[in-house]
Length: 168
Image (tube, rainbow, N blue to C red; front, side):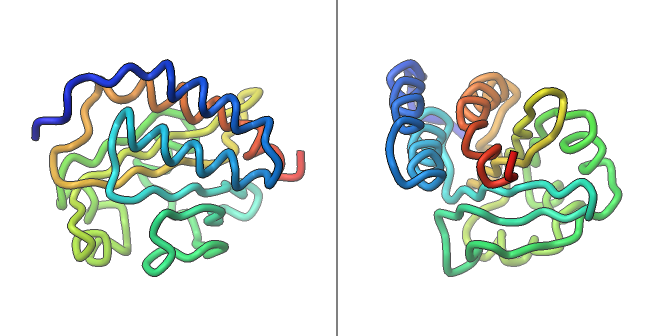
Protein backbone atom coordinates (compact mmCIF):
# COMPACT_ATOMS: atom_id res chain seq x y z
CA UNK A 1 0.00 0.00 0.00
CA UNK A 2 1.17 3.48 -0.71
CA UNK A 3 1.14 5.92 2.18
CA UNK A 4 0.98 9.65 1.89
CA UNK A 5 4.31 11.38 1.23
CA UNK A 6 6.64 11.25 4.21
CA UNK A 7 5.30 13.48 6.96
CA UNK A 8 7.72 15.56 9.01
CA UNK A 9 7.27 14.14 12.52
CA UNK A 10 8.78 17.14 14.31
CA UNK A 11 5.61 19.30 14.60
CA UNK A 12 3.76 16.24 15.93
CA UNK A 13 6.54 15.52 18.41
CA UNK A 14 6.26 19.12 19.63
CA UNK A 15 2.47 18.86 19.92
CA UNK A 16 2.73 15.62 21.87
CA UNK A 17 5.32 17.15 24.19
CA UNK A 18 3.08 20.18 24.73
CA UNK A 19 0.13 17.90 25.59
CA UNK A 20 2.04 16.64 28.64
CA UNK A 21 1.72 20.14 30.10
CA UNK A 22 -2.05 20.29 29.69
CA UNK A 23 -4.66 19.50 32.36
CA UNK A 24 -6.87 16.39 32.10
CA UNK A 25 -4.06 13.86 32.19
CA UNK A 26 -3.55 11.23 31.00
CA UNK A 27 -6.31 11.76 28.40
CA UNK A 28 -4.76 14.93 26.97
CA UNK A 29 -1.56 13.02 26.28
CA UNK A 30 -3.33 9.99 24.83
CA UNK A 31 -5.42 12.20 22.51
CA UNK A 32 -2.25 13.95 21.32
CA UNK A 33 -0.54 10.58 20.87
CA UNK A 34 -3.51 9.42 18.79
CA UNK A 35 -3.28 12.53 16.59
CA UNK A 36 0.50 12.28 16.20
CA UNK A 37 0.48 8.57 15.37
CA UNK A 38 -2.31 9.09 12.85
CA UNK A 39 -0.58 12.02 11.16
CA UNK A 40 2.88 10.49 10.98
CA UNK A 41 2.19 6.75 10.56
CA UNK A 42 -1.57 6.38 10.05
CA UNK A 43 -4.21 4.22 11.66
CA UNK A 44 -7.88 3.35 11.34
CA UNK A 45 -8.02 3.12 15.12
CA UNK A 46 -5.64 3.12 18.06
CA UNK A 47 -5.73 1.60 21.53
CA UNK A 48 -3.50 2.23 24.53
CA UNK A 49 -3.01 -0.61 27.00
CA UNK A 50 -1.40 -0.81 30.43
CA UNK A 51 0.54 -4.03 31.06
CA UNK A 52 0.07 -5.70 34.45
CA UNK A 53 3.08 -8.06 34.42
CA UNK A 54 2.28 -9.46 37.85
CA UNK A 55 -1.21 -10.52 36.70
CA UNK A 56 -0.25 -11.25 33.08
CA UNK A 57 -3.07 -8.94 31.94
CA UNK A 58 -3.41 -5.89 29.75
CA UNK A 59 -5.92 -3.13 30.45
CA UNK A 60 -7.30 -0.66 27.92
CA UNK A 61 -7.01 3.00 28.91
CA UNK A 62 -7.62 4.74 25.60
CA UNK A 63 -9.40 3.84 22.40
CA UNK A 64 -10.29 5.82 19.32
CA UNK A 65 -13.06 3.29 18.62
CA UNK A 66 -15.05 3.09 21.84
CA UNK A 67 -17.84 1.00 20.30
CA UNK A 68 -15.51 -1.87 19.43
CA UNK A 69 -12.88 -1.28 22.13
CA UNK A 70 -14.29 0.41 25.23
CA UNK A 71 -12.07 1.86 27.93
CA UNK A 72 -11.02 -0.34 30.87
CA UNK A 73 -11.43 -3.67 29.16
CA UNK A 74 -8.95 -6.24 30.53
CA UNK A 75 -7.70 -9.43 29.00
CA UNK A 76 -5.20 -12.13 29.85
CA UNK A 77 -1.86 -12.13 28.09
CA UNK A 78 -1.27 -15.61 26.71
CA UNK A 79 2.28 -16.88 26.39
CA UNK A 80 3.25 -16.62 22.72
CA UNK A 81 5.94 -15.39 20.36
CA UNK A 82 3.99 -12.08 20.28
CA UNK A 83 4.18 -11.75 24.08
CA UNK A 84 7.90 -12.56 24.02
CA UNK A 85 8.65 -10.04 21.28
CA UNK A 86 6.50 -7.14 22.50
CA UNK A 87 6.29 -7.38 26.28
CA UNK A 88 9.46 -9.28 27.20
CA UNK A 89 11.97 -8.26 24.50
CA UNK A 90 10.35 -4.81 24.19
CA UNK A 91 10.31 -4.82 20.39
CA UNK A 92 7.57 -3.67 18.05
CA UNK A 93 5.38 -6.29 16.42
CA UNK A 94 4.07 -5.76 12.91
CA UNK A 95 1.21 -7.90 11.64
CA UNK A 96 1.22 -7.29 7.91
CA UNK A 97 -1.99 -9.13 7.02
CA UNK A 98 -5.03 -10.97 8.36
CA UNK A 99 -3.07 -14.21 8.84
CA UNK A 100 -0.54 -12.43 11.07
CA UNK A 101 -3.38 -11.00 13.16
CA UNK A 102 -5.29 -14.28 13.32
CA UNK A 103 -2.18 -16.00 14.69
CA UNK A 104 -2.07 -13.89 17.89
CA UNK A 105 -5.34 -12.01 18.40
CA UNK A 106 -8.51 -13.72 19.59
CA UNK A 107 -10.53 -10.72 18.30
CA UNK A 108 -9.17 -11.08 14.75
CA UNK A 109 -12.70 -11.30 13.32
CA UNK A 110 -13.67 -7.98 14.94
CA UNK A 111 -10.44 -6.38 13.69
CA UNK A 112 -11.18 -7.63 10.16
CA UNK A 113 -14.81 -6.46 10.35
CA UNK A 114 -13.51 -2.94 11.02
CA UNK A 115 -11.66 -3.01 7.69
CA UNK A 116 -8.30 -3.70 9.29
CA UNK A 117 -5.85 -6.47 8.50
CA UNK A 118 -2.56 -4.92 9.69
CA UNK A 119 -1.33 -4.01 13.16
CA UNK A 120 1.63 -2.24 14.71
CA UNK A 121 2.10 -2.92 18.43
CA UNK A 122 4.53 -0.55 20.13
CA UNK A 123 5.92 -1.25 23.60
CA UNK A 124 6.14 1.62 26.08
CA UNK A 125 9.19 1.07 28.25
CA UNK A 126 10.61 3.03 31.17
CA UNK A 127 13.67 2.06 33.21
CA UNK A 128 13.74 -1.33 31.41
CA UNK A 129 10.14 -2.10 32.49
CA UNK A 130 7.35 -2.60 29.94
CA UNK A 131 4.55 -0.28 31.06
CA UNK A 132 2.15 -0.95 28.23
CA UNK A 133 1.56 -0.84 24.51
CA UNK A 134 0.26 1.48 21.83
CA UNK A 135 -1.59 -0.44 19.13
CA UNK A 136 -2.19 0.96 15.67
CA UNK A 137 -4.53 -0.89 13.31
CA UNK A 138 -5.04 -0.24 9.60
CA UNK A 139 -5.65 -1.85 6.22
CA UNK A 140 -3.53 -4.78 5.07
CA UNK A 141 0.08 -3.97 4.24
CA UNK A 142 -0.01 -0.51 5.83
CA UNK A 143 2.82 -0.86 8.36
CA UNK A 144 6.49 -1.19 7.49
CA UNK A 145 9.74 -1.64 9.39
CA UNK A 146 10.48 2.02 8.62
CA UNK A 147 7.56 3.00 10.92
CA UNK A 148 9.17 1.49 14.01
CA UNK A 149 11.58 4.22 15.14
CA UNK A 150 9.10 7.06 14.91
CA UNK A 151 6.42 4.93 16.59
CA UNK A 152 8.78 4.11 19.47
CA UNK A 153 9.74 7.78 19.78
CA UNK A 154 6.14 9.03 19.88
CA UNK A 155 5.13 6.32 22.35
CA UNK A 156 8.12 7.13 24.56
CA UNK A 157 7.12 10.78 24.79
CA UNK A 158 3.82 9.57 26.29
CA UNK A 159 5.63 7.64 29.05
CA UNK A 160 4.55 10.04 31.85
CA UNK A 161 0.91 9.23 31.08
CA UNK A 162 1.67 5.51 31.39
CA UNK A 163 3.50 6.11 34.66
CA UNK A 164 0.46 8.00 35.96
CA UNK A 165 -2.00 5.22 35.17
CA UNK A 166 0.43 2.63 36.52
CA UNK A 167 0.58 4.55 39.80
CA UNK A 168 4.34 5.03 39.61
